[in-house]
Structure formats: C-alpha cells, structure tokens
Image: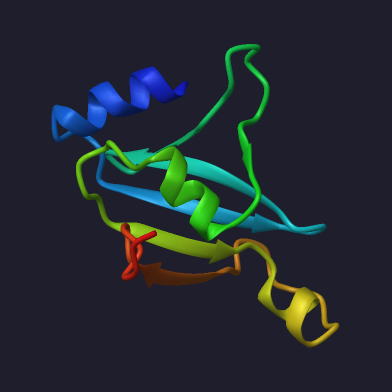
Length: 103
C-alpha cells in the first residue's frame, strides 16, 4: 500500500489503526491495519517506506483524518534488556496522531 492508497482508505474510514514500527538502527516503518491484516506502507518504487521519527511520521500524515496511532517496538527484551524475545512479542504504545505543539 502506498501513501495515496492509505489516504483513500483512511478517508473512507477503512483503516483500523496505524502502527509506527521502530526497527533497529533508528528506522521506522508505517503499517496500516484493516480487518485484522497488516499492510506495510511502500514508496513509489514499491520499497518499504521509511520515516526518521514519530514527528516525521506525523508530518507525512498531516492531511490524513485522525486515526488510532501506535508506536510498536518489535523486540522489547532484546532492545531494552539484552535478552532474547519470544516469537511475536512486542511493545505497542498508543501515541497522539497529531503533535500537541505547533510550529
């Protein structure tokens, strides 16, 4: 799914939630969830669409209708404690879709 498709689905009210997935190395990926399925966001070249931060994701999504928005850390124990994580274990934290401050 690309940004144009994501926006159309969001306007139509079909997106259940957006997840900003924090990957190793400071990379963030956006994923839309619809009807229990995950749809990673891709760019115009069909590569994974990377964002630099939560604020960068908000800037990319600034003209979208407000959606449930979560920050997801895929392997909590590995990143936070140095321990191996169980399969499917993640930390999902709701965050504000819009910034609370304005430029």
